[in-house]
Length: 250
Image 1 (tube, rainbow, N blue to C red):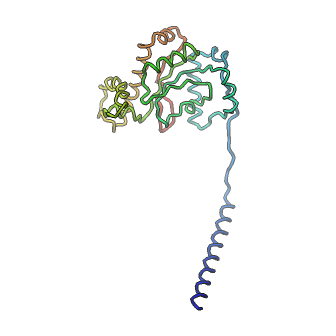
Image 2: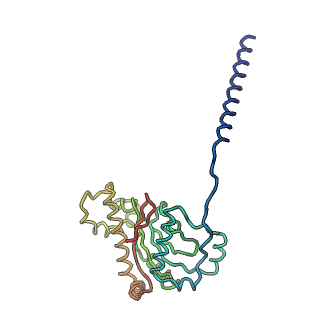
Image 3: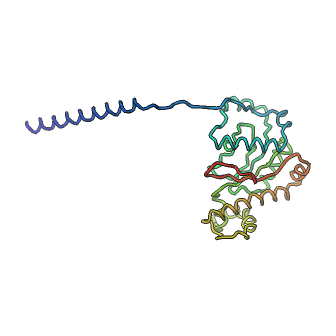
């Protein structure tokens, strides 16, 4: 009997202690001032029309991308009604630019430039190199659909660049990485340890890889080279900093 009374008293004290703790915690939380205000920008961009696309010059597109990059870095992305934009874009598309980016999931191209549905053509491949399929896509984007800019964008700490430096051999990855070899060859003048563990060297190769892709575009696409020579488009490079979110135009 005494043991039962002791157990009951112990349980009763435990309940009292837990209740007291909950009461104090609720009082503490209620005294905290939590700012639940969410600030968003107004909807300022809609799906581009053909007339708006025609009015753009290559330099205007570059400036638009730079301004979008600044908004991304300051965490002030434009609030968009994507549902409405999807419906508006269904009748046609008139993007400003074609952007060749790496496959890397840490490089969300539309967000980086604060652009929405119908603004950009995006081509993605690990190592952001150029091949026949991507050249054809760029020709379609510019010659057929009217985009005014081709931007090749590499990025910091690129896994494809590191793998190419390490001469990785694995399935189709082997032939894919061969496209990056020209950039490694162009980086022979690097002063320092040429290793995938050397951040500065990896960045150096990545930037040369962007430059190599631009050369390939002009060399292997007479259509795009001609458009660029006439000032109808520009073909430029950029480099994305994973740590800061900054796009550095080369």
